[in-house]
Image (cartoon, rainbow, N blue to C red; front, side, top):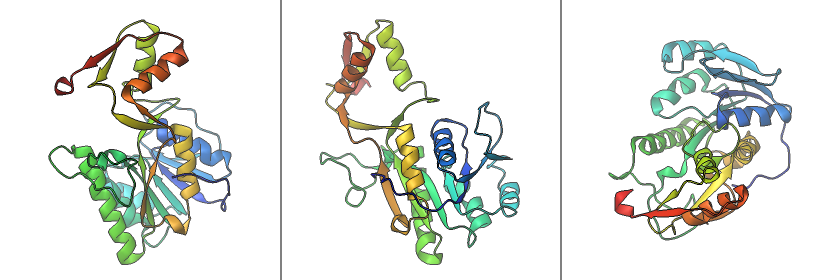
Length: 261
């Protein structure tokens, strides 16, 4: 999905999570653009949020308490960047059905089946529900279907924004670019799966946040899934070479046979 520069009306937004990586970038972006932002989380992550942000504390796994708390609150949009299953999402549906304008769920491109046809497009590529699909991906597929059914049957406006691999500041998944930079700077070999020709796309966390903001209250996005990532694509080897160029080193690359990875 490519975000334009047109700004919609200012809205009242609840961000589920909002203190780590994707959620934090989204909160900062929403505040910069003048939206009224509230975050809901357990309050366990130390983070400096903009002063304008309101905070609600709780555990989204405590479904009864969550629903009761949110029924007392009013929002135009819910941005859910911390939901993984229908059990996570259904309490928000119960709290907000008929009371919000738009529910946006952070999905994942891990749902797609393997293909030799690129790029992977939302409308034409099948999802993978077979034995190779992990529990994470299966749950994302189930949530998407559940939400889109609510969209069709009762008009619960929802959109799924599927992230590819994301990079950028405050990435809490240390196996991503942080480890790559550390190995390159230390002169250690970098392991590359197979022959290094697998193609992938990565998106910057700030761009993902912009896309989620631009989707809010846009009727054209209701009932749809969008793949959001960067416009560039890399082979696995090219990805390593790009990082090495940034660091200013000549990388030692070790190719690991696919059957061993």
